[in-house]
Length: 106
Image 1: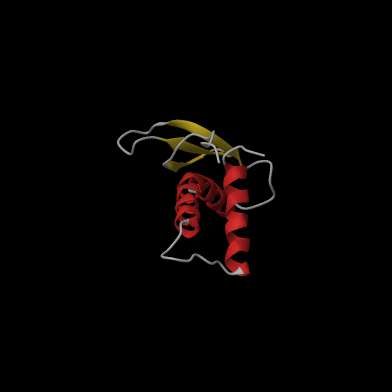
Image 2 (image 1 turned 60 degrees about the horizontal axis):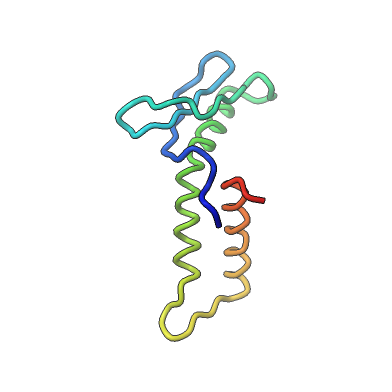
């Protein structure tokens, strides 16, 4: 799996500006720079829902990092034998697909 192409986090939701939400990236000590603008006017949903959508998008880089950690920890041999159930393997395969999609891979 290659390195992701998106702007590294953390991202944060900076609030609404009219019909748009601003998401920014920074080191936590400054406001950073705009990584996305979410247009509320295109959808048929409340401002509260639009803000919740923006917060979910802002959390994406952190979720990406956690999923990579889960994948790495679950695929490393543990002791003499390493066996995964079919159930576990299914979810690990799904995590790989999501990470590739989020990282800009096909």
